[in-house]
Amino acid sequence: MTALLIRILLSLPILAAGYVRLRRPRDDAAQRAFTVAIVCAGVLSIFSAFLPFVATVLHWEAVPAVFGLGYVWFSVVCFVKLTEALQFMMLSPMRSRALARRPRVVGFSFAVLISLAVGAGRWNEIVSPTPWPFDHYNWLVLTWSLWLLTLVVFALWIGVLATWAAITVEQSRLRFSMVLLIMVCVLMLFYVQVMLTLRSTVIGSLGVGSIPIAFTICLWALYVVLAVACLWVVFTNLPAVNRRRDTRQLDSIRPLWHRLAPIDPGVVLDPMPDSCPIDREDRRHALYRSAVEIRDWMLQLRRALPYDAWGRALEGAAPFARTKYKREVIAAAGWIEAAMAAVTESDEPDRFSPTPPSQPDVDSELATLARISQVSPEVARAVAATIRQTTPQADAHSQSSPQSH
Image (tube, rainbow, N blue to C red; front, side, top):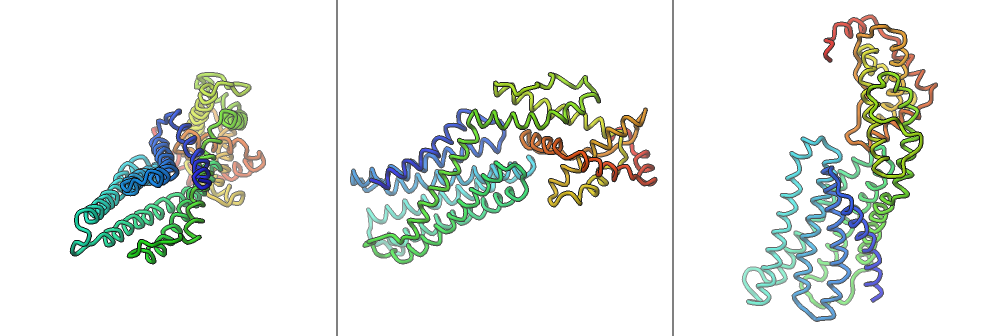
């Protein structure tokens, strides 16, 4: 009974995370896939907490098979949607859509094979206890082999994508989520190893007296990590946390917005609020518009710089940053500094430069613009000085570029 209560308590964060995400439907394909994965994880937690207890109390022999198949199918849906979400997040939309069928085909193929093996095993057990060439234990071995192979395939698949995301993304919230996901994948692989050892010793004998302690530790560790991950989802969606995050981003972006606004005031749809709005929709609108307007002004600034300005900015930012992302942030600050100076010095700028790269989604773009705004003026001026050291060949190349670029 104590173990049941603990499982129920650990299931509550997963159910709460699913409820929070269902209340706020997402338009983004990756977010929708994450929502389905979390809801399936909540259903799995209910399966794990209640059905074995019900089967024990009611002495219903069919429950284990039904429970097992339901657990397999919901697990496969969870794995497939989690894999799709990571692919949508890390790959281009066209590439991720092209690869979306792969996890579905792999996952549902395993689920169908496991279902057939379970059904054949139950049929042999009820109709003919000792058929040739497969008896009940052979089907049990095949079922567990397919299930553990499914876990290995998706643990490695999801683990690789999550590791890639943890290395490349710069948002601390997203990186922490990826670290938790990597821990889940490692525990899944450990679970497979323990179950291989356990099943190799008990297949062929129904008199199993105890479960190895490693299996128990692994199973509870999986519950705890999943509960922590879902608590993190709930925490990051609390209204107070959202408001604090939006306020911090708006305060960080405001100086950059005010500095670029004189370039073309006609771009501004609504004035930048002096304080963060209370309503979340108003806050998100202000953040979204500020990101769009800053990018519009940067597109206009590119006419003031030579063709090789962005390459020179990256070279100038290299001594100040260790990662590619931070180098791009510092280079963007220096690029803006040089472009603002060039606009004031030139009456008719006609040289084009590539703009600093944008991010794939609004939240990442806001985080990047906030970091650009926070680059120290001394570093930005140092990078701008590197940009202004333009060779005559670069000037000639930029002047010969078509104006439509």
